[in-house]
Image (cartoon, rainbow, N blue to C red):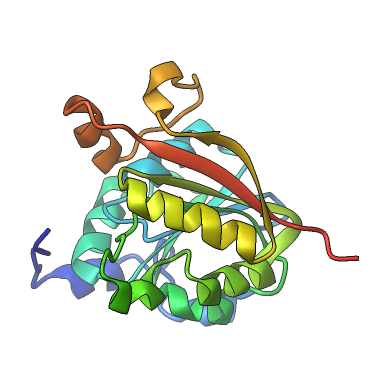
Length: 210
């Protein structure tokens, strides 16, 4: 999908420093405010996270997105309404710059780019390099919730999780066949569901190392 570039995107992000900290690395270790901290990596236009923040006011939510034109839309959707939601304009590869060790209770990976070509495998957000980073920032009871419409990426992710110190649970190859009442659909998920496409989902959590 071609990214539509917005000339005003950076101005939108800079106009709300409470929602989009201009130096997010200075907030490292302080995001949770004593509450559970859930982070969506690659938050896109923010529909999913804005809904979660409204539904669960006792949880702190952070959305990370590297494309300012996309993140600007997420910020506009919130417009300061949900006080338990903030955003980071940054790259997932630098997640350790923004969150301290064990700070995050849940990571969401929703419909991230599957990078289907083998030569681009290192860019997949379930590549071992990223899984190692997630282990560092996840709390001892933390987990990862992954949803995708791409079966090849899903299969790859299951193998990657399993081979690099994660356990799996609540695995489904057709989420909407018996959709849980608490499932919050992303923008992509709504589009795919309307086309009758299957949605794949799994929860992964680091194995306890003794």
